[in-house]
Length: 78
Picture (cartoon, rainbow, N blue to C red):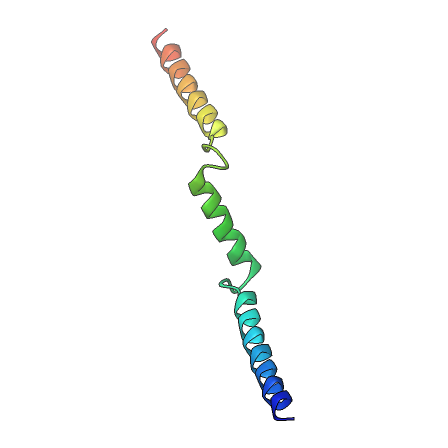
């Protein structure tokens, strides 16, 4: 009878240890999904997954402004 009491106590201790480890494994370092997504995107950007940023509209606006400025200058000279 003593043997079964000791093994039962050991089993309970083992189950408690497993429960503590499982709780630690399920813990999350982020307080919200938005925080997790922001960290994930920052990590992927740092790794170069998304590629270089392209500012096509900004370049077109600058080119259009330069062309308009040159057109005004040419119109005033002529």
